Image (cartoon, rainbow, N blue to C red; front, side, top):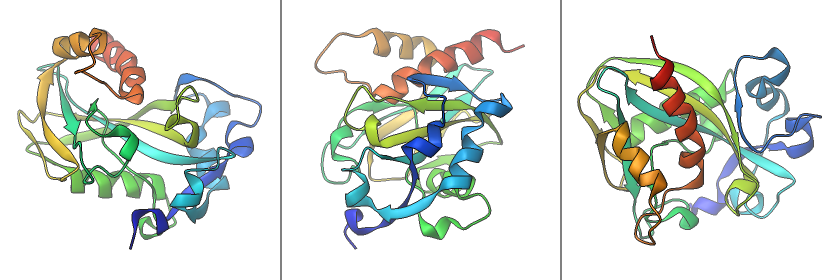
Length: 213
């Protein structure tokens, strides 16, 4: 089946934001701003090709950061620059967020978390223990991809020293020190392009590693 013919989860924009709109990042934890519950309560399914062209709906994505907090290393990768990359508009870009669309196969209890687990298993192999938490939410209406997507930002803490890519969408990837991410985010070069969601997530990633006790 063509990827654009698959049915994926979407949420009406009006129901998702419901008097609280934000641009960039919103932290998890305030009951009034529990976007995960809003997604689960208002989610429906739509052909992906139609959803990509309809900004009245947001496609929820579990966007996952994989971090070894002791070594302060973060799994970072470059997306493939050919058709293996599922999102044409992100080809060749650097990212430290893994994840993908919610599909019907992800079930009915909490398809966001089910999607997160499925995508993580498909995309990487983590050689260590893991602990999962929700950091917050990403919304970026400033660019084409972001206008039709909405991120639930997860953090996977691990003691792994090695994380290996599995998905052909990933050209290469490994755990690298957060200090190198600082350089990548600040780089002003046509050869180094970091996807916008990763730039947004980086601020929270830096805060997490900076305030961790």
